[in-house]
Image 1 (cartoon, one colour):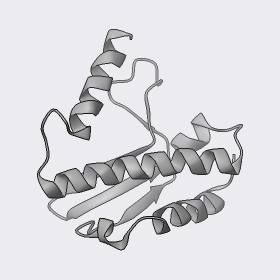
Image 2 (spheres, one colour):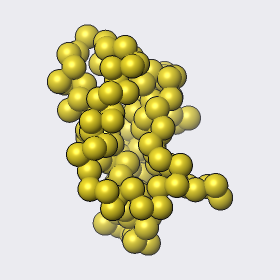
Image 3 (cartoon, one colour):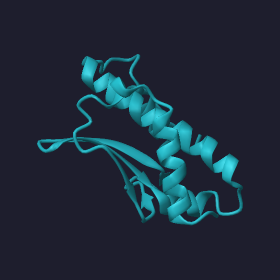
Image 4 (cartoon, one colour):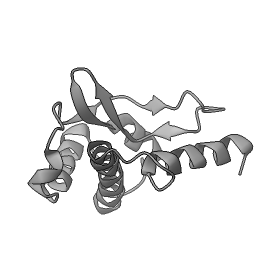
Length: 124
């Protein structure tokens, strides 16, 4: 696995690919955390959170978990990791854009994530 400094460089590259307007109202920016984040719904530490979009009274932010990537993609090369990171970053930005638009219905990514979690919990 690449080290955290190189991972941060890749994260910067991936974010630079996005239009500037997508960062509107992302008050706290895109944050890189060192640790692994395990979902509170995980059965055996097998549901790893790679990134998340959070809203608080202090503002909106996207958090990317380096440790989660390091644990999941320890044997993969830089390009593979960059592709996975791009997917996660865009996923979290979709949450941000849907939040700004007020979209929370059955077509929202939030709904899709809940459906995926229910499938996981049922063992599907």
